Image (cartoon, rainbow, N blue to C red; front, side, top):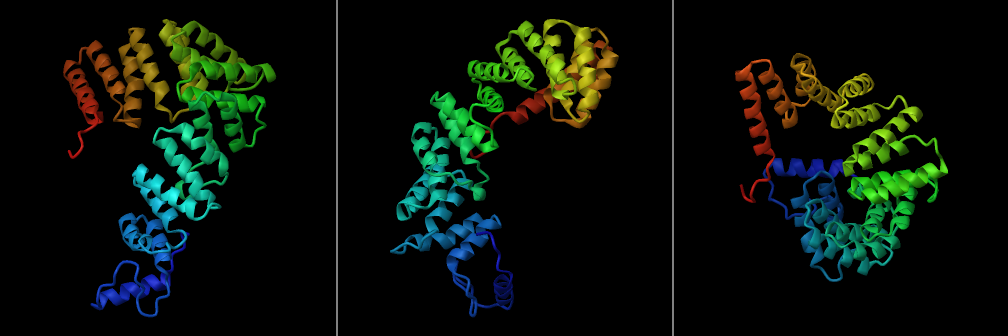
Length: 346
């Protein structure tokens, strides 16, 4: 699908550079045997979506319509986020060829993105081919659809299939729990993580997931308990110490927070989160000079994080550098303004 016919394109380029008559979109030059559909595929593969559609639209008006036209139109419309039009194209493609699994799959994915998971499920169940052209994992999307309609066991089985896990294994329960928490299904995330631990009490990352779910609920003591249990199983996980430091900070255990975050920095030196949390911890400990050390590092790593600038403003204010503090606070306002969604057409 993505093959580019270099010789044909070279001939077209030379023909145009010599002042030859402009060709209609999709029309081959003399001696050029590239079919219009292949030309459209080549254009789409290079990101020239408007030109590809200019080739495809006349083909779509032909009767009978050439096989493959609607599928490619659907993929292009999907990439352009014209989801309703994409769904219509994939419907036509699968009607023309009931064995076109890619179009059926993409129809289901598109319908899911339109907010209709129940309608998407039978389409995704019908087709089981990975859609490479859109970089989509169908089992993952099917799992999301199941989760949205509260078919949690089916969701777990779909997620597990993507990773090659047995559907009722400890790994499958843990995977489902992580993905459920990402969709803010905290109760189900907890259920899945507990079932994973019931099968394998020493499974890494399960207690960490439970800790994250408790943090999301605001139950800091329970979060600390789970994260400390994870540390006994998985003591070299930098992300764990980041989350544990966050939990200690929220509970006012600043010395423990500092120790955990120092470990996070050593294990994950390229992550900004521990540096920001260390800055916040040192501010709580009334040590603004130390806070500045870590916040300056975080600001160099990610200058657009307004939280870092807000903490820098507090640290500079605490050291009496009011001009620099005010500059940092102005940057907070500017960055927040830049992050605000702009009205259409602006």
